[in-house]
Image (cartoon, rainbow, N blue to C red):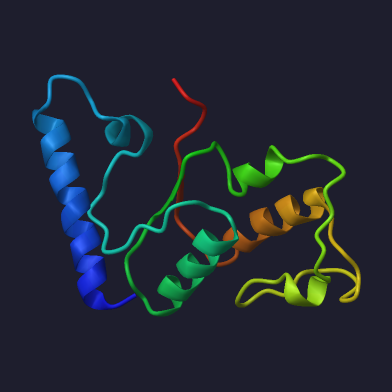
Length: 134
């Protein structure tokens, strides 16, 4: 993402936070995500958010990953138990960590959830889950 876009997003979040602070009732943004001064805020702790977080961490840039659910990969937890990816494991890994198991095998939903949980920990990715709705 170009630096101008990050500045625009950060400025927009700051404006939202300021407007919410002046309102009588807290905004949904304040309820779900207590804002901190960060340069970047990927939304969602699924594959895309975690991969972007990994790349931001490698660059030494400040960020926080905002997750609407209560854990990493929460969208995957709500899928069918019988779900199996249609791409082999060799193509399912994220930057810096191969998907474990037979490279020609197809991971299940549970394997994807476990992989996403394992992915966030070693890289120290700062994920802020909102938790269950109030």
